[in-house]
Image 1 (tube, rainbow, N blue to C red):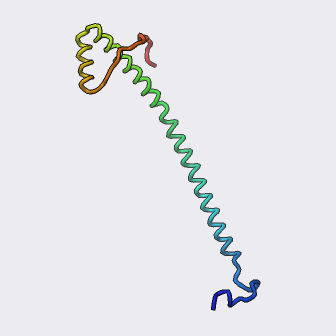
Image 2 (image 1 turned 135 degrees about the horizontal axis):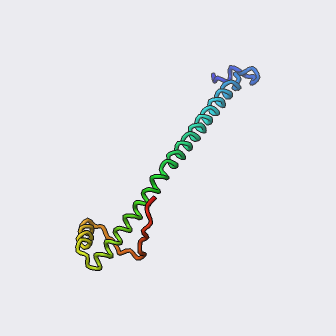
Length: 111
């Protein structure tokens, strides 16, 4: 005897309204929770990104200074400056290639 054979008239059978309502409520709660979590994660990532902007700017500024120094050292080495040649050779032994600077560096102070 099957479950539904006990209730030959569908109007007298078990109601699916309560289980469907509970399932719908649970689904909406899960979707709401995931939405809130995603919004918090987005906010946290935006804050981390904003916090790194200053460090990235400082790093780029330092890289430009080091590149300028290295370029000047390479230019001096090509001109025959002995300490500059030693510096370039030391850097080459560490697999660091430096090319002479093509644009003369400006003497502007770093902010």
